[in-house]
Length: 89
Image (cartoon, rainbow, N blue to C red; front, side):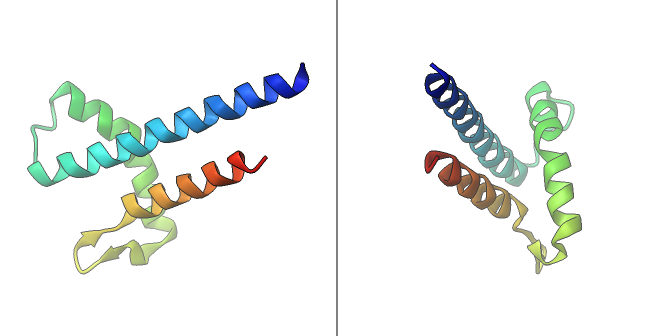
């Protein structure tokens, strides 16, 4: 019984990680287009991603390399690492 609950929780966390990876990818692609920042979808994506991007940029200042922001890649790799650890449980 307890094992099934743990598996369900891990699967939920893995689904949330996967969803957030896609949010980061979409926000990164949309940033190339320079959309209207007042667009509701853009606002939601910015609210979900900018705090994490800002945190990564502060902790790892080298992620902005020659004007290219690599923080989405760092975030995706970190999430994939956490996901692989959870799958190993």
